[in-house]
Structure formats: C-alpha cells, structure tokens
Length: 271
Image (cartoon, rainbow, N blue to C red; front, side):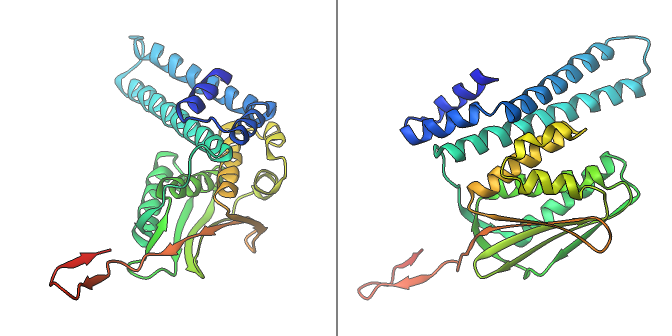
C-alpha cells in the first residue's frame, strides 16, 4: 500500500518540499492506512472467491449471475476507494488543483439522484423512500469541480444508506452567496458515527469502531476532500431521530457567453 501511494504521487510530480512533507504525513497515518489496506484485501478476497465459485459446476446459472454481480460490486468499491484516497492525498499535498469547469448544477443534481435510486434498487432498500429537494432554477451554470462534487455527495449518500433500513433519505442542493450546499437527511441510526467521522479532528482513529470499514473510510476521505476544497461540514440530529449532514464550498456562477463587437469590424468574440 505504501509503494502504491508513493508511485501514484511520483506520477503527479510531487516535488515541492511542502508537498512532500504533507504526503509523508498522509503515508504515516497508520490508522487510515490500516483501514484502506484492510478494505483493499477484503474486496480482493471477495473477487478471488467469487471468481473461483463461477467455475464450480455445482452452482446454477442464477447463482453464478449473483456471483458476477458481487464481483462487479467489489470492483466498483475498490475503484471508488482508490479514487477517494489518492485524490485526497494529492490535494492535501498540493500536487493537483481543483478542476473547475462550467457545470449545470441543476442537471448534475438530477443525475446524482437518479444514480441514487438505481443504487437503492441494487441494495434492496425497498423500505426506504428517497426524497429529492432543491431550490435550484431550471438551469444554473456554476464553476465547480464536477468529479469531486459527485464523489463527495455519493459518499455522503452511501453512508446514509448504510444506516437507514426503513423510513426516508432526503437529498437536497441550494446555491446562495457564491456557495453551493448539498445536504443528506435520513431517519437512520448513524448520527454518532457520522458525527465522529466527519467532525473529529482525527477522524482516522474512529473507523476501527465501525462494522462497515468501507463506508467509514470513504466518509473520512470525503471529509478530507471537503476541507481540501475549503468547504464546511455540519452534522446535526433531526426531528425524525436520524442524521442531517450539510456540506458546502465556494462556487461562482458563470454568466455565460458575452458577445463583444469590435469598433473597427463586425467580428464577434465569445468569452
């Protein structure tokens, strides 16, 4: 695990003294590395085991399809874990910057909630109702890091889904004063865990108490990613006895194309 991280950082040209110091701090966090390493081994063992079972003639075709789905799920979780870990480490080290681009925040939010509904069906969460809330206009173009925004909100939703067995999950988005805010509210029982992992100054020491290491590690990494983007986190209990998580970070509205006409010609320039 140490070598994978060092090689990844080398590929990103981590050469500054400050960046190297921060990266060494990240590498030397034994608890967070132990959690990531444990989860990597767990998912790899799952892939190997179900791949072996696929070749066993004793199982029916339906059972083999279930094995294939388990393999795909483990692969998706591995990819997500690596993306969260390496991206957070690179941002903390200063070797990469935000990838800001014009994004239709309204469409992005719609896409996220659509993906969440698919995930709920896959996990058999038929006793949980997803409620979509937003006060966004029909079209809102913001300069945001789309990939990291998607990753953060996905992690928050997955955490909520793990602790909610019945009831509701509300997902919302607002934009005010050049700040975009996403929130996830649920009727689950994960307040203490979410509060510890998202608000603790040393969240990596909390994950050992969690039964779901994968979800806990991704929540820790989401916290680090939010802070690296100069964002804020708020966690509070709600009236349903569940948890409400609010995350926000700076986002500037793109005013679109401005058409300028030169005084000496009819040529128009799009900015």
